[in-house]
Image (cartoon, rainbow, N blue to C red; front, side):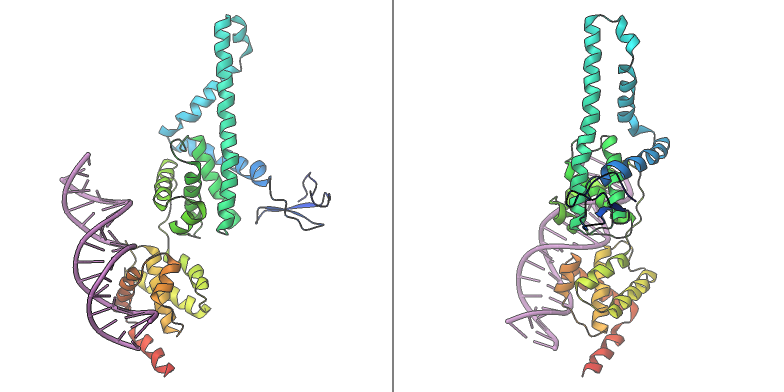
Length: 306
DNA sequence: AAGACGAAAGTGGTTGA
DNA sequence: TCAACAACTTTCGTCTT
């Protein structure tokens, strides 16, 4: 898809949009001209249509938008202005000014926030779909005035966290925290607040979603990874997973799986990657051994080594 | 000496009165 | 709003390899 812009590098008008990646690329020199895309095409349109539905479903928190809209129609009337005295007219000019300020404030906020969002999400190497979702969530949050009293960055981080969860590519709060320089606590708080206010339903994250990332970070073989997922399956059936932190379970499963395949990693290593402590891994690990009878498999590999 | 293990006390968040 | 509670962490001492 070509768009009406020139490449700043070589001047070619052969620019193409890669929607999956959310990038604009110059076909001639290969430069990635990614800038404008998020702003002007996607979120706005998607948001508008989506928000219509959301509005209808929720009652209370729409006062902010209502107020804004009411103000807009009032100020627009020329005939009214005609009949008013100077003072009244000034009043309307002030209102008009305010309305202008409010809408530009939202826009300016969005611009900054989306830039920050982009930065964090590229730091975490998140797929474009997640980034888009996060932008949508954030836009909704801004329009409902949920950012008030919170830092923009923390809401961005919360939106990203929520988007990750919804797309089943979960990142830990620690990772978000590192990428955004916001405290874990704060992200969690705004995340809960925003999802509650916007009535976004989030499925409890599945430990298996963490496996591929942890596994590759630990340089484990694909076999080990598959085995870990199997273990998680069994663990879920044995009801070992409910109420426990998903990362801890994922880490323990990976640890066991590595032992079985003779690719031993220390508890410390796994713990660091997964963002939990050794103790948690140990607890989950002993539970897994107890309930799933994995001792035999581990012993087998030990013997094979000798 | 490093890793694994377990106990004990502390922390932040949820729940139920 | 407060206290009880479960999960997780921190810290530390002991055992195993």
